[in-house]
Length: 173
Image 1 (tube, one colour):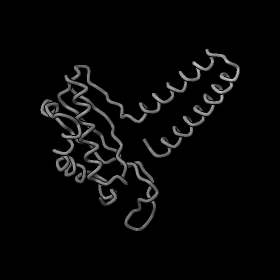
Image 2 (image 1 turned 90 degrees about the horizontal axis):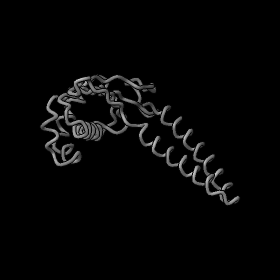
Image 3 (image 1 turned 180 degrees about the vertical axis):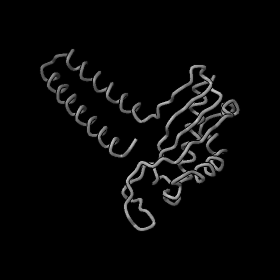
Image 4 (image 1 turned 30 degrees about the vertical axis):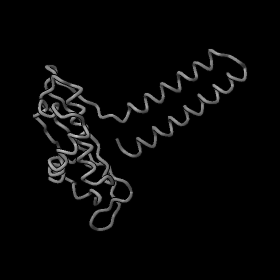
């Protein structure tokens, strides 16, 4: 998901929230409980949709043993934080899909206006980095939680990230 998509979603949700709030205030002044309740429901749905829209889309094979997803990494986060985020996501995906044995994560790097090439020119992304494959999901599921797994596997994912294309675009940690 690019920064433009995120900005567009934020603006869209703000407009919907403002409209729902105005409708709710108008309904409260008229003492109409149905309209007020409807406004609260619309507001709640928009919050839920907003939180779910940033999640990477997981595709699972028919036999439910292989998963494929695209995961966006922000260049400004640096390689260490990005490797921890990736480790947590792999853990959470493995934990939520107990039949899955293998996951393939296609990594995309999104950049901000701060990222420049070696000549000082601003870069516009997103950039494909490559794919990381993880086939040991049964062992990953044994960890207590995603935070613990991320702390134990940060170096593993860091080396994998730095070996991919466009890794030089990471900001320094």
